[in-house]
Amino acid sequence: MITSASIFFLSFIIFALAGNLERGSFLILGGILWGIAEAFASGTDDALMYETMQQLRKEDKYDIIYARSRTFSQIGLATGALLAAIVTYFYSLNILAWVSTLPALGQVVVTFFFVEPSTHLKEDASSLKHFLAAWKDLCKNRKLQILATIQMLNKGIGYTAHRLEGVYFNMLIPTWLVNITRVIKQASGAISFSITPYIRKLGFFKILLLSSIGNVLVRTIGIILNNFATPFIISFVNIFYGSEATAESSLLQKELSQKQRATMGSIVSLIGGLFAAVIYYIIGAIADIFSVYFAIVLLIACKAVLGGSYYWMLKKYK
Image 1 (cartoon, rainbow, N blue to C red):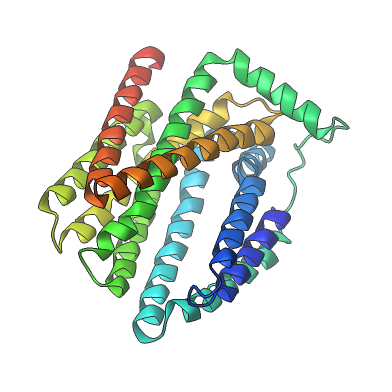
Image 2 (cartoon, rainbow, N blue to C red):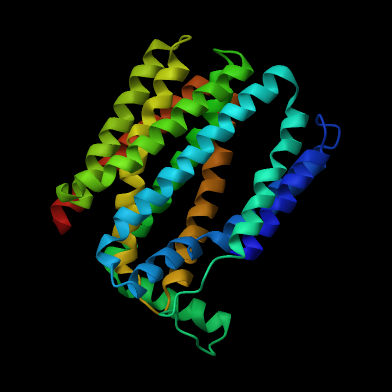
């Protein structure tokens, strides 16, 4: 976690040094460092949280703690988006890049105060052995394979849609207003995470299905209008993000083995990251050949198909 936060901070410095796109190669380098930092964090953060809950003998309430943690994460993102709107309105993106290094530095400081859970197993096995053991466990668990595949597809589609939205929104509203829509989106996410513990009795598969349906409906309404109101409507899609993310993580953590929890989580993130990279490229090419609007519509269709997989999982593992 410390290594991840440190590399994140370095990537922000590189982005800021890029200036007003005078050094385009710095943006590429910053993106590579960002990906490396995410690789160190992926699987580790959720495992740290789950094992801490085990130490407290409250792992059955993991979803509640996960949701509360992500609520504050969304509040932080909303605050950051509001700050970004103010800075870009009065100054520039370059100034914003330098301002962004400050919370990144704060993240580094905070990670030094993390405490390793006492339930974490200390073993002499090499990284390769950990990886192979985790991969074998993944291959043996059919339910885990399906959950991992769904999470991989959902992240690939979700990440691509989130990044492409900014381009689409900028075609309909000014740049500084795009940041305001991000404030709305993250605030909606905070609300979603905060209310998720109160609907956990529905069951995680039902929560996944209902959240997916709500996500598609909100995006569809916005894309049909295709006007000034569209960015603001679509920004409310995160009202379903918290419940979906919490249900996904809770189901996945229950299937991961204790010894290989962080490693298996990283494998899922690795495959998901590779898939997201492919999706980025394909959707980007489609947007160039046809239009950004068409690419957004295609992503909504993919999300609708994914909702069908939640329904299938609900029937199979209810």
